[in-house]
Amino acid sequence: MKPRTILPAIAAVLALWFVWQWFFCRFYVPPGHMAVIIAKEGKALPPGQILARKGQKGVQEEVLGEGRHFLNPIAFAHRIEPVVTIPPGKVGVVTSKVGDDLPQGEFLANAGQKGIRRGALGPGRYRLNPYAFQVDVQDAISIPIGYVGVVTSLAGDRAPEGAFAGPNQKGIREDILQPGLYYVNPKEFKIDVLEVGVNQVSMQGKTGGAVITKGQIQTQNRAIDELQFKVLENQAAQREEYVRQEANSTLGVGGSFYEKKDSDGSDRRRSGSWAAKESAADMATPQTAGRTPAAAPAKPADQAPSFVLNQFVEFPSRDGFDISLDMTVEFELQPDKIPKIFRDYGDLPAVVEKIIMPQILSISRLKGSAYRATDFIVGEGREKFQTDLTDSLKRSLAERNIAIHNALIRHVNVPAQILEPIQQASVAQEQDLTNQEKQKTARKQAELNTEQQLIEQRGAEVAQETAKLKAEIKAQQEKKVAEIQADTARAVAQVEKETALLRAEKARKLGRAQAESIQRVEGERARGFVLKTTALGDPMAYNLAEFARGLSNDIQIRILHAGPGTLWTDLENATLEQLGGAKAIQESQKPAR
Image (cartoon, rainbow, N blue to C red; front, top):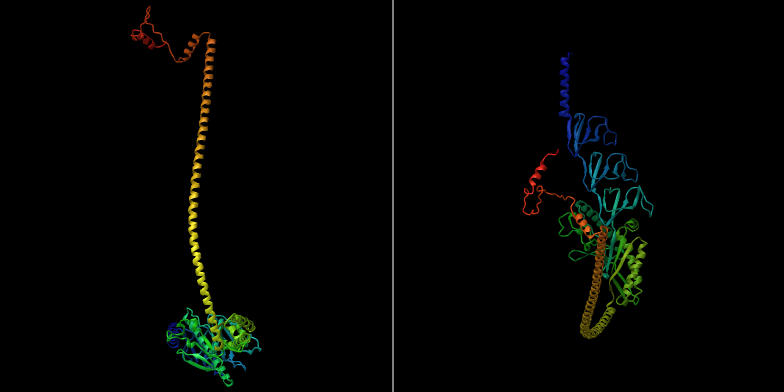
């Protein structure tokens, strides 16, 4: 075949292949989806096998992700399915439809086994073949502030009696979950939330009592608040179930009715030892109706969830009277002790019913029967009883890992036949005390008035004495000032006198010194003149010598000659020319030879 015919043939084949691939084999998987591939040709699947591997006919194990793909439509078909999306605050529980059967007694599957998988999928997107896996989306566990989570493992070998569950064991685990968000498989682990911190058992005489616990503390995260609300709602439902079970178990043995107050004030009665006063569903208010639980504001302290009891503290006094108490016991479940408490006794209602309330009733009756009825009304008996009760509860419940903070006696109910006389006697006694105090007050007032007058009188005397002292002090000060001034003037005069004497003495001495100095100087000068005159031999000679010494060294003497034979003696009116000055000038101007 010639090259000219080969090249067009190749180009035609490539064009046909491109058209086939692009227009017939190409398909697109959009974002958030996947492609499940079905092979139309290949080996038949063995019995019991659901998904096909490469080379087998049927739904393939592998799925294709987002993007463009090319498959032969004659050999393969595909279906676009959404990927598994786990939103925030949710978990995905995976059930495998393929794999080996689980061993006898196991209900959680590992990789390669059929059944509910261990672990859970956190928030995100997952490409799981819907023919191989089923994913159930459930809420994550959000433990509120003020609570801890007790973990119960639901799979594995049963832990020994009285021991915590370890790895791969079934039972309550020793470690607890602190407040936060946890992605836990609810088929693998059960999380029970319990209150930490101080709770109250409050009893009101023979009308029963209540266990008051804390409510939910709102956060700034709406989704977290909703998750926490659901956790507390599940907690309330579990406690309601416990109440119903306890009620049914006690009906045949004289179980009593427990009251729950509705919003309209009516009573709803339940049989058993507990009645839930408020469940999580009861937390909604008219203002929050129609909104999600997360949008509801935090409940105030007086609306905290509680459970109602009909048990009350009543005992006979030492003198045979029936006494009932209104009291509040504050107790605390410490976080590190909660797993043991939950393992031994159960949730908070069971702890109160089985441990706290029996101890309160037993110790109250034991301690209270040692007091007379009047001790709870007058004197220090009530305070002493409260102290003894608190100390005994602390010691007794500390052995059961429960901390007691206070046992407060709010009110003591005593029979009217002893209460009224005691009250009347107390009123009379108080009235007598009041009258005595009034008399004391009047007497004290009279004494006060007397003392007030004495104070005023003494004040006047003090004022007079003060004025007198002021005058005396002023006179003494003026006298002292005058004496000081006189002494000062006298001292000044004395100083001036001494100064004048010193000045006179100074002038005298200076005059004497000057006179002596002049006398000596002039005497020496006269002696010098005498010596000079003696040396020259004649006073006239001395005078001439002094005259000569007084002449200047530059003096010149010129004698002008007027002519021969003539000496002018009368020169007063003569001129220079007459005196022959012209000739002298001429001679002086002649050049020297």
